Every structure is written in C-alpha cells, then in structure tokens.
Length: 489
Image 1 (tube, rainbow, N blue to C red):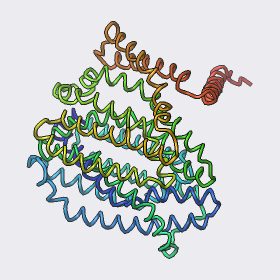
Image 2: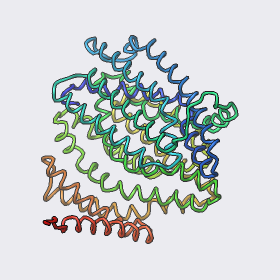
Image 3: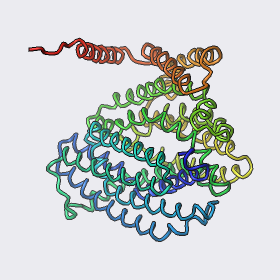
Image 4: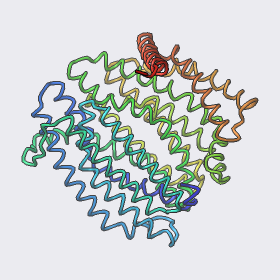
C-alpha cells in the first residue's frame, strides 16, 4: 500500500480508519454485555433468556446503526477541514469516510450475532468467518494495488469483504441457534437495563480505549502532514499483527470466565489469569526479539523507502515494550474482569489514561514529533494497563500482586535474555537481514529456539504433556498420510 499509494495516500488511509474506529464508542458496552449474559444464561440452561438478550441487543444496535449512517452523511464532505489534506486527496478522503461509515452502520446490527457466538464459545465458527474475511480483503486489495487502483476502489473492496463477514457471522449464528427468531416485540426493557448496567462501565472503557489507541494518529494528522500518520502507523501495524495470536487466545477468556463464575469456580479463574498471560508473553517473545533487532532491515526491505526506515524504525522498541508489558502481558486481565462483571476499575484506569494522553500528546507532538508521541503513549499504557490493571485484578481475585506478576513474567524473562543474545550473534555473523530470505531464516531460527525453550520453562507440566501429545498425534497422522499406498485393485 505504501509503495502504490504513496506517503500521503497511505497516511490518509490510516487516518480514515483511525477516525472511523471512534464510532465504536456508540456501542455503549452492549456487545460485551451480550457476550457476558449469553454465556451466563447458557451455563444456567435458560435459552429463553438468551433469546431475549439477543433480541433486545438487536433492537438497540439497529437504532445505533441508523444514527451512525445519518451522522456520516451529514459530515463526510467537510471532515477534511480538521486535517492537513491536500486538495487532490480531499474527494477521496470524503468517499472513504462515507464507505467505511456505511460498513460500520451495517456491522453494528451484526454485533449481537458475533457476540452470541463468543458467548456460546463457538470460536471455531467465529474464527472461520474472520479467516475468510481476511483472505478476501487481503487478496482483493493486493490485486487492486497491482492493477494500479487507488484509495476509493480499495475502500470498496474493504467494505465488500466486511459485508461478507457480516453475512457469514449471521449464518453461523443461525447454525448455532437454529430456533432463534428476530422479534422486536421480544425485546424487554428489564433486559435493556441489565445490559446497560453492565455496559456503562464497558462504555467508559471502550471510549477511553478508542482515545488512547487512536488519539496519536488523529493528533499527528492535525499537527503534522498526513504522511506522518503513515510513518506512525507502520510500527503500530507491525505490533497489531504480531499480538493477534494472543488476542485470539484471550478472546476465549471473557465467556469462559463468565461460565466459571456462574458455577463458583473462582480458583480456576485466578489460575486462568496467570497462565494465559504467561503463555502469551512466552509465545510473543521470539517475535519481539526479531522485531527489535531487525526493525530497520525489515522496514527497509518491506517498504523500500528510506524515509520510513528513518521515521518508523526508531519507534518500534517503544511499541514492543508496550506490547510485552500491557498488550500481551496483561491482555487477559481485562477479559477476566469483563467476565466477572467487575471491570469498573479497569474502565476508570483507561479513562484516566485517555485524559492524560490527549493533554500530553497535544503538548508533545508539535514539539517532539513522532518519537515524543510514541514515548508518551507507551509510557502511559504501561503505567495503566501494565501495572494498575493487574493490581486491580489481584484485588478483585484476592491474589498477591507480586506473586501474580512473578507468575506471569519470571519464566518468560528467563527465555528472553539468552534468546536475544543468540539472535544478536546470528545477525552479526550470519544473517544481517539484507533481504526477506535472511530475515525469514533468522525469524524461523529465533522462533524455534524461543518456543522450544518456552515449552520446558513457561508451560505447566500438564499443559506441556497435552501439547506434546497433540503434536505427536498430528505428526503420526501426517506420517501415515505420506506412507499410505494407492489402491491398485
């Protein structure tokens, strides 16, 4: 995209999606409430309540989708006045805002279906739909770029793939709950109040999350040329892709926690918090080592523009620290708090982070540029989500904070030090990262070593046994497949 769209074109693309994400604030926490209560009533075997929850949420999201579409229609032509966008790109910026606003409006209605699949723990169906969506979106956008198309056709492709995702999610929901019927009359004000009561803290958390995650890009676009949004977005995209594995793992935790809490199994919830975070850190460490040591080489080979190597690569270490100590290392903590319905403290922490972040970034960006923005955003992230959130979780679960932190980080850090030393030596003597082949080889070596060490240091004994058994079974099946002789009769 950077190569085909140019610096300002890619910066506008990143800015549009940073702006549209703010529509998620209008969710008001109802999606997480649907996950919570569909899991809760499913555990208690109350299907009528599940249907009432879904119908009530559908009515609400339909209204919100209509409001978003109306707001988009009223503002898409004039929104460029808030940013440094050259006249040549202003019509394309407006068209992208309109397209993505339409997609969000339609997607809002489908929130209930995706949330219900999570509540029913049908992550297989939920994930298959997303795999199809990502494949269609990536292949379609890649083809359009190769054919020389610009921003608006790319926007049409993204929206089309999102519509496909919405349809697949609805189909999977009907497969999971075939007896469900959409009936606005089945919505109940009592359930609305229940969802809103749970969701009000989620609303604060989600609104604050949108601010802390998107404010740097929006304020950079306000104070600096649009191309700088793209420079900042590159390390953000690298980290987002790298932590996606842990995001999918912890997506199970909210509904699982709600079910365990409904059954009174709080000790299992506490163990869930410590072990999933530790495993996520251990899995992410090899990726972090590669991104840290090969950051300049990766961006230079990937984008082939020196300006991105100069502007984006120095930001990567700051984002990696934030990922290790907040996005990955404590990603499971909010999920457990949501599952317990005790996320109000987490919401207050995010609100504080958001307020301080906007004020600090407003001062820092005009004076210290991209590096100042990254240091400010990541420093506040670690203070809030890396330290305060786990402390609050320990208070809710009545755990020792230091015992919890040691359980999460001690074993993975034993892997990190020798792994970084080995990778540094490999880069210095064998694979300096001159092309994708060398970077891929270094990545494969580091990942194999890191996950090999992690298997025997980070995993609990019973989980290691399960993993080895699963691996052995898969290897046996693969061997049998290759050894099978064709039937000549």
